[in-house]
Length: 141
Ligand code: 5GP
Image (cartoon, rainbow, N blue to C red; front, side, top):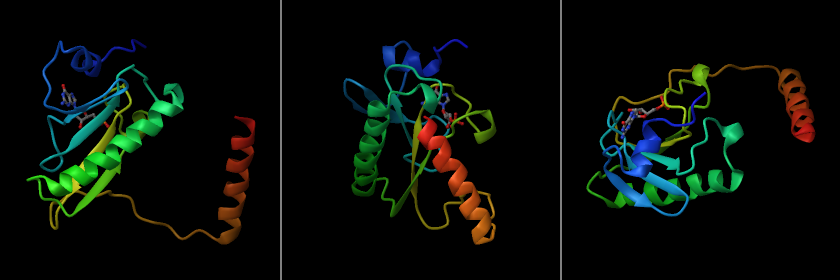
């Protein structure tokens, strides 16, 4: 799959964007179809299609920049009193642009944004079983 998407064009300045932050590794800009006013995207400058391809150090920077942006959103005229982070990794997770991006979504009461999932109530044994499976996978990575 071609690693270049519209986000590479934005990084290179070949496509327009409303930027809010840039450093050597990370760029943040306004989402053109915001869920709420002030919705931002934080991306690595070097394209990575998925979390598996993303340099973990840069992944940490995405979160650090997202943290600062969350504080800035609260202080700015966006005037939110809450923030959601969201990252879709893979088609099934809802990823549409295959260049990793962290959504930073300002929240105000009654803004209509929300996750549709319903929590379930598994037995402790089921939680323990899957926890063991995930621990095993971690050890093999
Ligand atoms: P995903 O569904 O992959 O998590 O989110 C992709 C996001 O990228 C969407 O929220 C969409 O509005 C945003 N997006 C897609 N194309 C562009 C673009 O050209 N410029 C900007 N600023 N955002 C874009």
